[in-house]
Length: 126
Image (cartoon, rainbow, N blue to C red; front, side, top):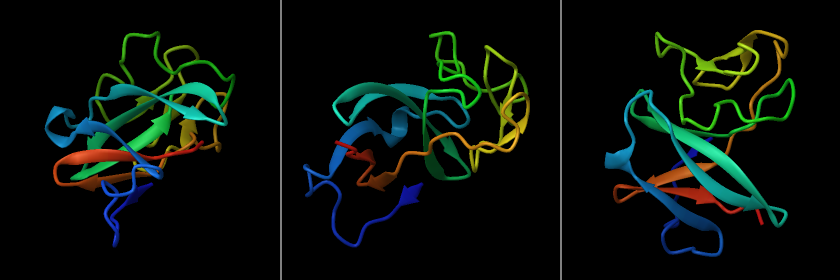
């Protein structure tokens, strides 16, 4: 979920963590980052899509294993769908909906991010 804030996300460090610069995020190419949820370290990925930033947990909905093989490649060859390299499942990059594969109809876990002053912030989950 992309969020613009009435209150600055940068001024709320207990609620938001800066994870990337807008300029380092390629269009429809993902970058990985780590975060904590309930004290457990997790991995996420984010990318630009139509002028916005999208972020999801790096975990397939079929079997909870990383979508990539650790190589940071999250899109199919046409860059039109997110691809689970393990099962071949395809996900809509704007919603995270699985449109083909063993988890069809399920959604990737979307993470809330905000863009402010050229930086992307992740809403803290701990």
